[in-house]
Amino acid sequence: MKASFTAILVLSVILFVTGCFSYREYPVEYDYSYHGKFKKYRTYAFLEETNPVTDTTTLTNAIIEKVIRDRLAVQGYKYKEEKPNLLVSYKIYYDSLNFHGYDQPSIEDWIKYARTDMEYDEHKYNLKKGTLLIQLYDRKQDRSIWQGYATGVYGNIYFNNERQLKIAVRSILDRYKFLAEDFMENKEFILEPES
Image 1 (cartoon, rainbow, N blue to C red):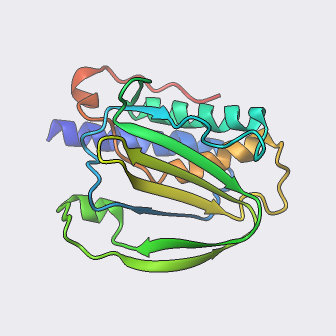
Image 2: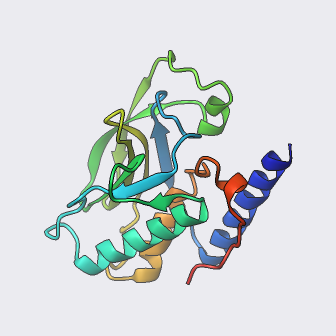
């Protein structure tokens, strides 16, 4: 009971702090795999060449990766290059695109039962110009277990606007609410505001 209360408190603080930094959230959708072991992940690394330099600048990649690192650290995940639990990928799509996602129960509702035998109800999205996609892969299962995407992120927004890019990444990661396994039991939690 105490661990549940503490976890809820931590998530509330995370959402409050990130809310203070974002004046505008971007429209975000996410979907997930019914085979994800969301309560069992502890470590992560980035997929190499996740977003080739031809697509974005090195500075843009650095900003995206820093926000992802900061957010996952607050949630208790450790960066580990050798055999991490999760692999993180991101991609910016500059043009409009048709995207396949799924109509699913909210991940918070699904995780209560974690049924792996559920059917996927595919949904086609027509995403506006400028979409940021972040995917999490379970390395052992060799499959994507969660993806979040903000569409219209770059409509009328300058690509080199660091603040707006950070808000877009945070808007997506706000939908991934899982703490690393055993995080609350093994660590003292000190929340420091993001810069």
